[in-house]
Image: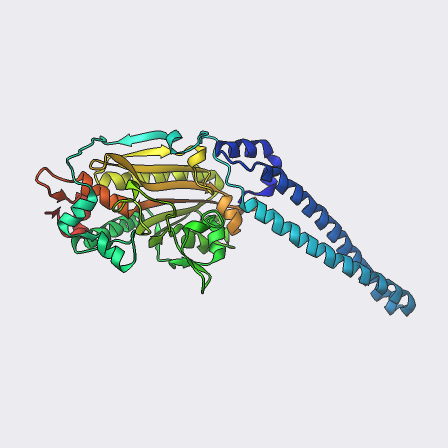
Length: 422
C-alpha cells in the first residue's frame, strides 16, 4: 500500500498517477490525509497525557518519600482522570489507525512515470518483438493436437473436478515436467535460489502482497482453516520476508519457485477459455527479487532480459508490452507482459507478467533493510518464468510440421527424452 507521508508530500503526483489508471474514487486520497491528520493529533494528545502521567508518578513517589501522603493522594486522584483520558485516546487512536489502513487498502499503486494513461489492453504499448507472427490456419489448435497425440485429456479433468482442470498424460505429462525443470534450472543458473513454498497462505500473506482485498473473489478459500489456495507462488515466496529487517549486504534477494496455481477465473467464458488458454489449476515457475530502491529498475530490466532468453530458447515468436495505467495490476508500479503468437489460433497469448511494485508490497509486508542511512523500505519485483499452459499450447501449435508431427524445442529434449510427437 502507499505510504501516507508519500501521499502528503506528492499529492498531485498521486492523483495524476491514479487518473492514469482511470481510478474513480480519487476522494480516498483526501479522506486518508484527513483521517491521518486526526490520528496524528490524537497521538500528540496521548503523548502529552502519558508524559504528564509519568511526571505525576515521579512527584507522587517523591511526596510519599517526604512523608507528604495527603498531597500525594490528591495527585493520585488526578492520575485516575489521566488514565481514563489515556484509555479513551488510545481507543480513538487505534480506530484512526485502522481507518487509515482500510482506506489505503483501497488505493492502488501509483504508476511509474513511463507508464502511459489508458483504459484497457487496447492501449498497451508494444516495446519489443522477436520472430515472425505468421498465422497458419491449417495448423491444428493445441486442444486438437492434445487429443490426436493423447497427451492431455480435458474431458477426464471435467469428470474428476470440472472444467479448467485438465489431466496431462504420457508424453504430455513429461513435457509439462520438462518445462518446469528447464525453467527452474535456467533460473538457478542465473543466480535465483530455488524455494519450495506452501501452496496455501493465510490472510496476512494475501494482504501482504496485495491479492487481498483486491482479488478476493478470484481466490479459492478454505473456510474451515481460514486459508487460501495460492494463485501464484509470488505470495508465499515474497511473504518469507514479511516483518523482516534485512541487512543491506543481503540485498539483492533473488528467489525462484515452482507451484501449482489456483484461480477461480470468475466471469471467464467463450473461445478464450478453450483448451489450455484459461484454467482453474495450472503450473507456473516464478522469479522474485527484493532490491534496494536505487537498483530495482535495473533489476527489472535484468528480469525482462532473462525471460526473453527463456522464450528464445523455446524458439517461440513473442512480443513485450508495457501495460497502460488502466491495464496495470492493482499493486504494480509498472508491468511488462510477454505474449507468444499462436500460429494456429492466430492470436497473441500472454505467458508472463514482470512487475516492479516499488514499496507498495513492502510497506504492507513491513519488509525493510538497514544501511548507513538508517532503516527504509525495500522494493519488491516478480515475474512469471514462465506460466506453463500457454507455453505448452504455443509449443504444440507453433512447432507443428507439414507431416502433422510436433518437434520438441532442442532446449527441452534432454528433459523430455523424446524429440517429436507423432
